[in-house]
Amino acid sequence: QEQLVESGGGLAQPGGSLTLSCAATSPMFNLLTLGWYRQAPGKPRELLAQIMSGLFGEWRTNYTDTVKDRFIISRDNNLKTVYLRMNNLKPDDTAIYYCNTAPKPKDSYWGRGTQVTVSS
Image (cartoon, rainbow, N blue to C red):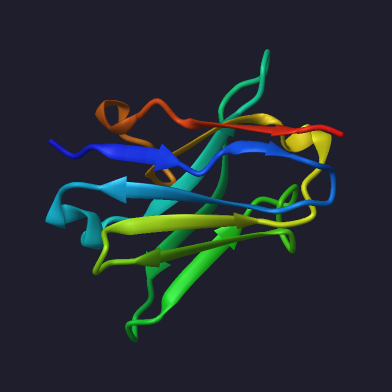
């Protein structure tokens, strides 16, 4: 049973940066397309970015328009970890951030997430 554990959240000022990490336990991790999601209070959970293997071994990424050009998703299969580098943070980025398979998340993989708060 795969477990995904998110970390790296915290308090950041507007315009600041944070890097989130998501650590997996199973070797199956390396075969999965993974994504970062977030859920703000009173809003549905949304997919922000996903990363998958390309045809020639490169990493392919996709982003939602709200975070494109500000957030960067990456992964290290040796460490079974996926990252989300968040730059130029805005108060609207305040949410709990999760990782899971993408574009369709697996219910049993949801972890506790990591809280990101952007405030001055």
